[in-house]
Image 1 (tube, protein in one colour):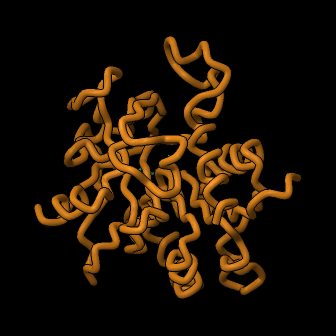
Image 2 (cartoon, protein in one colour; image 1 turned 180 degrees about the vertical axis):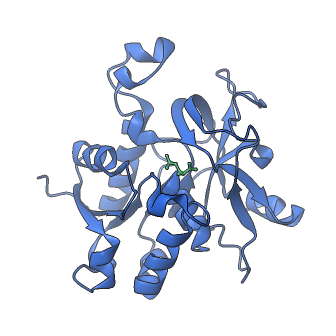
Length: 260
Ligand SMILES: NC(=O)CC[C@H](N)C(=O)O
């Protein structure tokens, strides 16, 4: 086990991407550990003891009520203050797919100061589960991934979700996210231009694939970088490379945690 930053890979019943996430962190030099939300609830494990909090994808609690809502309420009821302190101290909190839904349900995103929920990840406009490769563009400079993934970077990455359509309850939310550099990833064509369906797999407003909090250390994204760590996981010409862009993403998070 490398002596790198300690990562809590949080899971509960129905999480299904924790192994790829665990291995991605391990291969990028971190020291990951699986943490079940029950261990947080019983006080056996403290979120505050880690350097990185990662919430992986899956079908937590079977997506009952809404995807991510049960996971979010269990986490925040058990350790809301710890998680908030973690965020305030600038430590990275990363949610992928169901993990992103958890961050939105926990109101850790979009972090615009509203008491009420102003964003949601709703059912895909196609009304079906979309599971395939997409292209994503980095839209802003982010303190966690920015050194290795600067704005303008376009990369291929798979999606696999039914509830990924980013919506905001008012126009002002979208404007504020854009102005504050919080729109971190958008879906695009392979050439990096704006594109509708099928490149935007879910009908997200402004093609949004992922956002960050204002400080940039809480990141939620719908696509799965842990499924794009190696070239063999990619489609088309990208298959020829040894590593995929997922490695860059995890390398960047680990480097940020070391620098901190
Ligand atoms: N891969 C995932 O994390 C899927 C998230 C969620 N279960 C959905 O379908 O929207």
